[in-house]
Image (cartoon, rainbow, N blue to C red):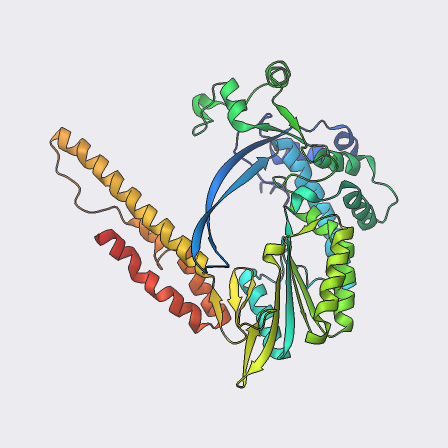
Length: 436
């Protein structure tokens, strides 16, 4: 007898949370029962923060510097995640139909399966469109803290419009409410209460963080549950439905901007909170004004530091990119740079890879030194060479899923010899670092 396959929205999650992991059969019996979903009590998200060191370029000195950035990760309980995933699947069907109906299916790129394409293809499509247009202008806009600033009433209205209803049904409303009136618990504080290791949380065959009674008596009593800090704004990024909701939130804006840009012979792309308008230069300022006006109605904020206006003009019979001051400056889009003729990887991405590679080699050397100290104490022969398999997997062109393999894949898709030239010095840099 053939074993029944789990539904496509079901994903078994192995992390520790406030409830137990459940089978696909059990999950399906819950999520497909509208009455159960309508009355379901959602658990708080578990959240933790970690610091990233991001390389950025100083616009005044053109030098790279380290920019600290804190990032919060939140994740929902097992049952809650299945509910979110199921309702995301339901809404996704209606959303995709709406995009096709409005002619937006080639413009909205993030969190969707678009003909098997990735951000490499999306950037390449945009750059090729500019090449075809010749002299034109590009307007690149970016939101600040996008998910944190989504207005709940606007989201609710767009959700209703997608369902073609005046009000959300009880089950949909409870899902909506859990994502707007959400709460969270800091993982470090939560694990400390129950003496759970941050690194091996499932030690001693632990199946969940705590029981429902322990949660009430110890977690809530200790006042560790924090409500949504943004009030009437914001949705957590850690649920299986959040990405889709961000797209639904933008539906009316996408429709208006695409409709307007089409009338002036341009193109509109949006990848999550990155927007790109490619329009006739004579229409550049009017498109920017309209976009900013419509964005203000969404109650989200433009990140002025990432706003780019680029005019593509012929210079000695070659298409070149110029900024507002008439200086040659490439357009930056989805991690790539385009100067009107050639495509490049961002220099900060190359520098960040080199920094990570040096750190990886340094750690491997320290590990070898530690092992050799142990070997010496035992009277065993010392290790004379680094273990290189992991280093090659992470930092050489032999690795299948690292920055170098990504870069070479981009060079192939974009037919970019300039990217290959950027990557060439990195091929030998790993061995040089090992040989030091």
